Every structure is written in structure tokens, then in C-alpha cells.
Length: 148
Image (cartoon, rainbow, N blue to C red; front, side):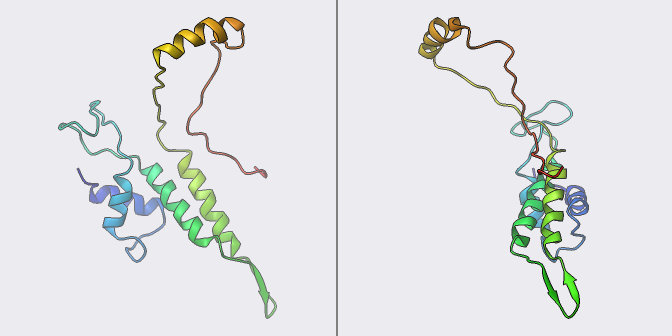
């Protein structure tokens, strides 16, 4: 199922691109469709009853990252008494990518271990006391800049 006009319009608001001068509706639809979600009825994106539901924050983070990449070569300069800080464009785009990246839906994954590894692991490493059940894993943590 394709991204709707409402999805595209909302993403345009998120990325501050009200016109299709930079990104066409097809471009945005392609990015949106990279981030499908389970719908409100619990249907997976590959099921026939799935209602198109997407993570627009993840799509916005992707596009702000692209904008930051395009602005990375911008440099500051002084001329005719003026002080031009074009690098602020890059910093602002990075900040927006972090902002939307921190609001994306959490994701998870399963880890499967081969049977022979489980036996070896339990009999040697586990019994050594080096592993505890208190190990914690966190996903989708957005790194902060050093100055934050």
C-alpha cells in the first residue's frame, strides 16, 4: 500500500519543504514506505488487512540527515564587514535529524543461538559467574553532542 497524500503532507511539515521543488511526492512516498508499522488492529505490513501506517518521524530523521549531508561542505566566511555562518545550516539540520530520530517508534529484534552454542555457553561461561540476568539492552538511543 502506498503512502497517502496526508502522510506526504505531514512529512512535508516535518521537513520544512512545503513545495515539491526539492522532493517530489513520489520521492517522499518512497522514503515513507521504508518505515512501515504494525497498524492499530495489530496487522503486520505484509498482511492483506494491513492499514497503511508509517513511522513519519523515522522518515523525517532520514530526510534531515540527507539535508545535513548536503550542507556539510558549507563554510563560514567574513566579507565586506559581514560575518557569514553558513555552518549553522548544517548544525540545524543535524539537530532536526536528532530530534525526529529520537521520536521514531522503538524497534526490537530476536537473537537465536545455535543449540551447540547454548550447551557450551551454559556449561562453561554461564557457570563462571561472569554473566548475570541483569544485562540490559537499549535500542534507538540518539547520541548527544558533547556540548549537550
